[in-house]
Image (cartoon, rainbow, N blue to C red; front, side, top):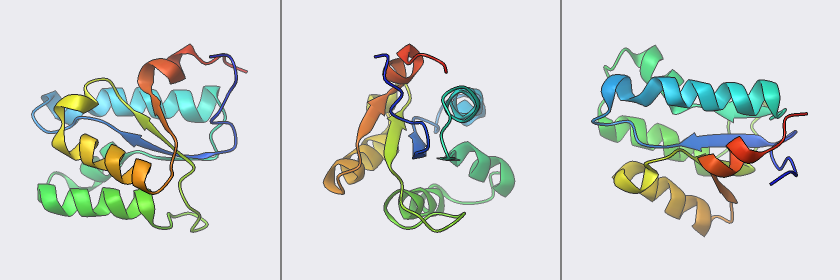
Length: 123
C-alpha cells in the first residue's frame, strides 16, 4: 500500500497488552513513532502511555473504559473523533483488542493492520 491513509488523521493504536512482557509497551511506542513522525498522523492515542502514567495502579476494567472512551468519544486535544484504528500484531489473541476492533467497526472507524501501516511509504 503506497497511499498514506494516516497523514493528518487522528489514529487509535489497539493491540495486546495483558500477559505480554511490559504490557507490549515497546511495540505501541514503535508504532506511535512511525505514525507520528514518519507518516504524519495529526494525533495518536497510545494506550501504553496511559499504562505508564498510571504506574499500573488502574484495573483492567478502568483501562478498557479509558480506551473505549478515547476510541468512540471525543479525544484530547481538540476534542475531535478518531479517524482510523491501527491493530498491532497479535490483536486476535486479546479480548480487549478484539472488543476495540468490534467497537470501531460498529462506529464506522476504518481499521488498518500493523502490516499495512508498515508497508506504507514514508514521505
